Image (cartoon, rainbow, N blue to C red; front, top):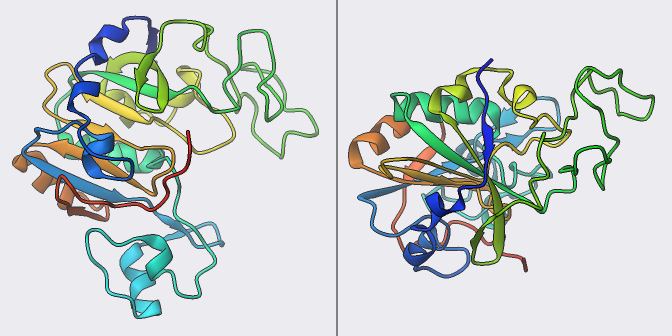
Length: 253
């Protein structure tokens, strides 16, 4: 089964930090400067009934104007629901990977601050631990067998990619891995929360995607051609300026 494999080769991300020229909360504060185009992919808004809504629909209800740099707190109106924070989600990544196209070798970064990441043989700090194949205990919130797994390696103890305010464990694989609905389970990623990946880029550096943990959107730096495909992919997305501030969810590291 296709999967992402943990890698200690953090030098593959050494090009990123020197190109993070913006401040916290800005496009080039999370995605390297120098790309032809930047796309903001809005995370779906949980509607509280098992479905989701688009930001534009929320704006239509609240009367707030929708625009590429819209900030949730200014458009939400009476809505109690929130967009996913720090994650595009599996369905979103499947659409994004199809829009990017091809099957490049890619690197994926996972923020190591999630409480669900466990040292092999120990329990995550925040939730009950399940080894792959174990039966779910009574206190597992009804999760399916094997829904919570840990990585084979102690990813926190291994070399990490250090970026301003964040540290990431790196994994290597193919872009097509995102098309496999079981990829999180096979890669040791299938834990309770919806986080998937926080960073991703191909070996040729033709694009870079960041789901910053405090953002309610994923930012993609890329070519104009790929950007146009993302806009036509079915994702709620818009072109944003490199110096734009798409999120007010800027919290201390």
